[in-house]
Image 1: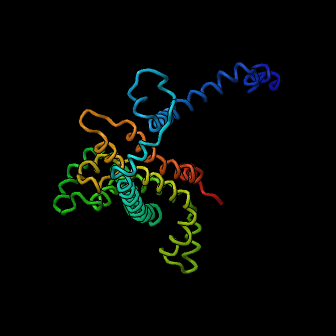
Image 2: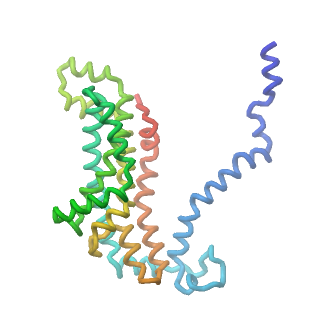
Image 3: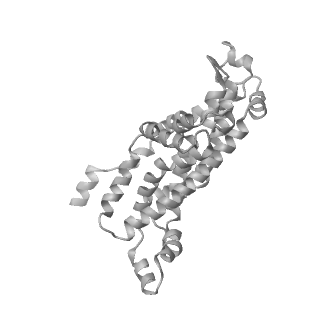
Length: 293
């Protein structure tokens, strides 16, 4: 009797999606809208970067299409500005800051989650709360420190200040991932005579590769796109990173060079998009805290 009543209450289940109209309204239409909203900024960057100046400044024609595409904006960006140097500065600062932050975060997360010292939970909460402090507030005292150390207008200023907002979140993320690794593995290794360093390097870190990649992608992306610290601590054109160089060097007063601006934004977004696309499976696995056996 109960089976018949359940069938009466829910006779179709998910069969309502089999109607073409309902499937279009509930599945395909939202997906199309989401894809358009997501990809339109990239499309606009591409068409603007290949539009000649005549089309950019003209009010006639279709603004969403290019009649005579050109690569002059990319040529101007790569050979008449310091963009290659900005790219190198951004890569150097992002990679070094990411690896330094990951090293500190691994040590902190492992100590908090696996060594079980008194007050570990409070320390972990304090680290996460440090991440919630806006960089717009931290850059004021950090600027004083950078000036006193004589690091103003150097890449080292960015390499040393970026971990202040990278380490807290990476530590919190790795804490959750280390927590999902069974303690029995470490206990067996300790019985066999392994040291804590051997357990970390040979057992914990190999199992935590998705979490490390997830934290690394997060740190690399934040370092690559960081604006406030780079704007405050860097003034020389040859030391600027891409977010600062494109904004400050390609805008002259009230004149916006839209072609080179969009070309610089497009080239600057490609490395991050490549990293995400290459490691997307590990990123999702690390964010969910799962351990593949």
